[in-house]
Length: 168
Image (cartoon, rainbow, N blue to C red; front, side, top):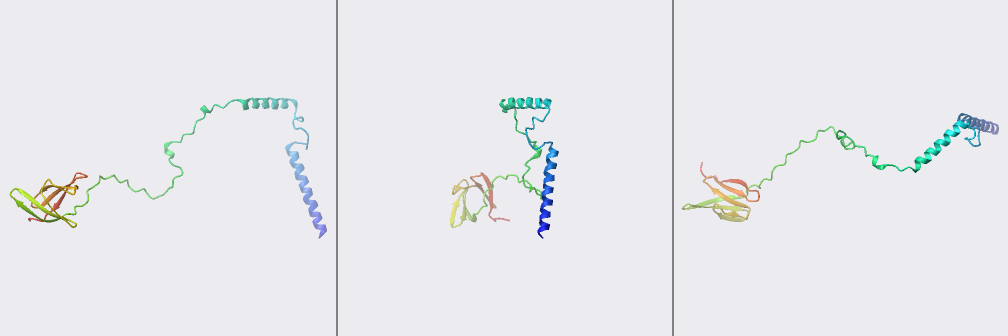
């Protein structure tokens, strides 16, 4: 068994040596020394001229004002936004605010001469009002007819009607 291991080690060592020699031969170097000294004098002169030119460029100032940030077209959009095959919901137009529903209950009315008073209930409070009066600084009674009472919701200046159920 020892003989096989020694032969295998020798073979691997020889293969490694051949690989190293082949890479050195492909690179064109003979293993040591200064690579510039093996180059012909014309190539050495060109190399020195390039080195001097590069050294001069290193000391030059960069004109940063000439650099510009790359601009993308508007068609590109947001490249990293999440994508979906579901169509977006339709845009809802902003609707003006609407007054709250009328919570008044009609209890009745009294007419004395040309003046009409209306009895209304809101939660636990009862109100007796005539046209032109306000209730809780929120509602103004505008008109009283046999069939309807017209209110104005003061914060939005919106008209609302309450049916009295009177008449046909």
